[in-house]
Amino acid sequence: MSVLSTLFEMPLFEDLPEVRREWLRANLAEHHLKTGEILLREGQRVTHQFILLEGELIAEKKIGGRLVFDDRRPAPVSVAETSLLAGMPLPLTFIAATDCFLVALPEPVVRTLLNESASFSRHIFRSMYSRISAYDAFILNGEKLAGLGRLSAGLAHELNNPAAAVARAADGMRESLDHLRQATAALVLSGMPVEVVDKLDDWASRAPPTVDSTPQSALQQSEAENLLADWLAARGLEKSWLIAPQLSTAGFSHADLETVAASMTREQFSTLIRWLAAALELRSLANQAWIGAGRISEIVKAMKDYSYMDQAPLQEVDIHSGIEDTLTIMRHKLKQGVTVKRDYDRTMPRVPVYGSELNQVWTNLIDNAVDAMDGRGELTIRSRREGTFAMIEIVDTGSGIPSDILPRLFEPFFTTKPLGKGNGLGLHIAYRTVVQRHNGMISVASHAGETTFKVCLPLSEHPVANE
Image (cartoon, rainbow, N blue to C red; front, side):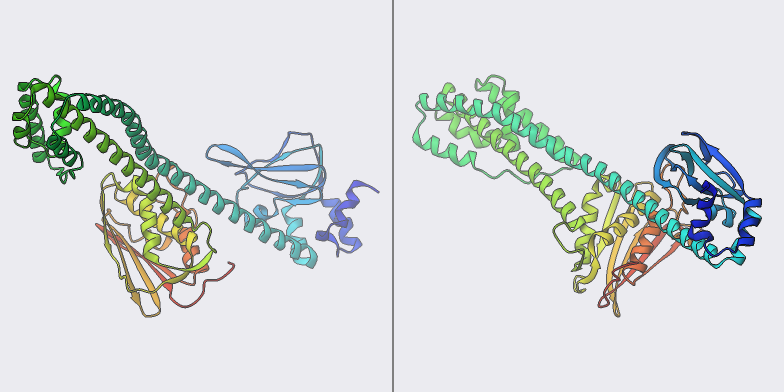
């Protein structure tokens, strides 16, 4: 049996009469490829449908300037029929994985078969549908992975700051413990009066004053430290400029210490102050470590809630919690100059949704809003109940979207961002998630200085299980 006879064993040509088979034999061209040779390149116009009868092809696609593996196509298989019939550039590059034998059908032959053969047209359209669906899933998953990568990078940056603070505090605590141990030994040997020791314990446990971060307050704090350092130096304390900031930050002034200083020798006072400074420094470092660890815990909890780990994919959720989790993990983008204003209707009931998918919607909308404002402006998030729907509005103070662009915003691959900053899938994914997965609605209104994305989700109807 000849290799060419395999052609007529394929479902594509199973109902062709003998006369048409002879006609097809007379109108096809045979091709041989060596391993590694390219059959078709991405972007070229296709003039033939190729049928691989022997061997195997590899399909690759260029993404981000590099070729990425798409799939393998072993014989027998049809290639390039979708691009040929649509008159569109080829989306893939086909390379011979082994030595290959193919036949090529010119476009007029393909269109004749499409009109005359039910099996040919049926299998062509099935193949087109299958590949378009697979390609759609491929690019959407790629965009989701890219979004996950951006979130991961931001989270790593956010986690690095508190982790570094905890590490610094832990390192400082070792030194402070040594200082406190030495100061305690000196305090015991100094013969300090019991009433002074009791007062010292009260001082060490005194709650620090509320910090005022205004420039004027910082200047006043610096002046207070200098005055206290001079006062301590006058009473014989060495390196008083290192001790004064710890005492001043805890709210001590020379007036607090004056009475105690008058009741003991210089050596005893120096020992007392060094012990107090070491105790206050240790407490301050422990507080820094506690704050840093709390921040890490907050970020991890937000990420867990954002992805709805350990929960069923479909559940009734508090929309506001999902939005807040999204804002937490996107803090690295917001803290550069974006003010977030919240106008939540906390009486709104819980909504049946796919939680992690919906959080991707908030991520895409908020990310777009921040980009539209160039990282500086006011982001307003509102929620309210409208009949049987939960309504969420995300408003930014960017330059606005031109009216001729608005109708195309949710189209796949449509983007107004520069090359390398967006591929036009973020809003398309938001549209699919809200409309197709949750039976909801998403719309946009814009004018100079304000753009509003409105998401409406049904309060009672359950989202669809499959698209």
